[in-house]
Image 1 (tube, one colour):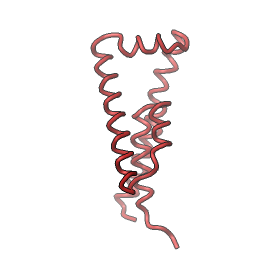
Image 2 (image 1 turned 45 degrees about the vertical axis):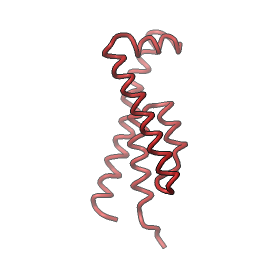
Image 3 (image 1 turned 60 degrees about the horizontal axis):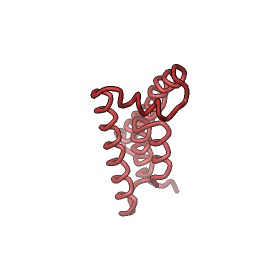
Image 4 (image 1 turned 90 degrees about the vertical axis):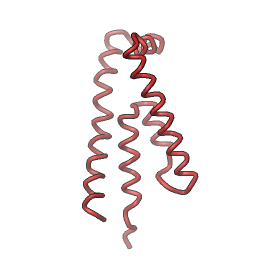
Length: 113
């Protein structure tokens, strides 16, 4: 295993944790302030053109991520996508993408005999 691969795995894992924690800081604040309502949340993420642009960008990026994952698995490459779809839907792309990249690097490791 190369030094670069070890470094990448550590970076991806750290980014997956950061991508899980940072969004939830904001989500918890939102739900504490407004209560848990999907309508309120949807209104908030499209509250103005800037927020709507970020939300649209995230939704499109998530869709592209899913297409790429399922395409790779269809060619017999990459980790199975189900866990990363769940992470994407429950936490966000900021966690799911680096977690997927971590798992992909880990899967590339030579099998120990």
